[in-house]
Image (tube, rainbow over all chains, first blue to last red; front, side, top):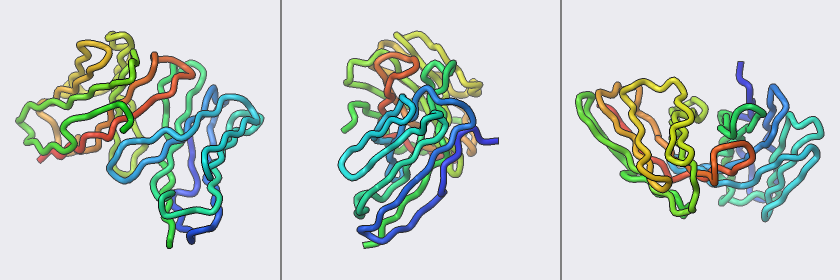
Amino acid sequence: SQELEQSPQSLIVQEGKNLTINCTSSKTLYGLYWYKQKYGEGLIFLMMLQKGGEEKSHEKITAKLDEKKQQSSLHITASQPSHAGIYLCGADWAGSQGNLIFGKGTKLSVKP
Amino acid sequence: ETGVTQTPRHLVMGMTNKKSLKCEQHLGHNAMYWYKQSAKKPLELMFVYNFKEQTENNSVPSRFSPECPNSSHLFLHLHTLQPEDSALYLCASSQVAGTGNTIYFGEGSWLTVV
């Protein structure tokens, strides 16, 4: 079974609406990374979370890591067409030597 | 511009060809990675180099041969590939390989095997 689950797989929202993407790990995380990818291109680093309960923001995107360090959410406020893309979470588990394991991604479309 | 440059961006090769993908990082990092991204599958780690030494080979077939001549350059040599090897190949780098080091990706090389 998948050790890192992302939900939803895809999401279509109207411009200006808020949305949340979730990433759930089967084991305790050392770190959780969020990336954004436009189709066929590289991954752009967004944020990294390490501490239980930690929350970080960049422009209109906020990411949180739960206290148990097994679940993270990415929240976008007042979505814009520029937010469209594939959002990937990457897990850094103890013993993984920093080699990230990625979820399958969430494809976000924003309707103008 | 992420500081990690990959060439070529697109490559079409026959199953009997030999070609190479090139990656260069301008971030002063010491670790470099190859990842493979296929349709409908999660990103898969292939190889890790830390200070030019290979530290991870994730059961990759021998038709993929990595080379890391220095900490700034990474190659992926390809020979006798199969059509199922068609994918986006992503190079990445980090300060060092290890927990807590953010990994930065290049734009990727699209490989089509015919």
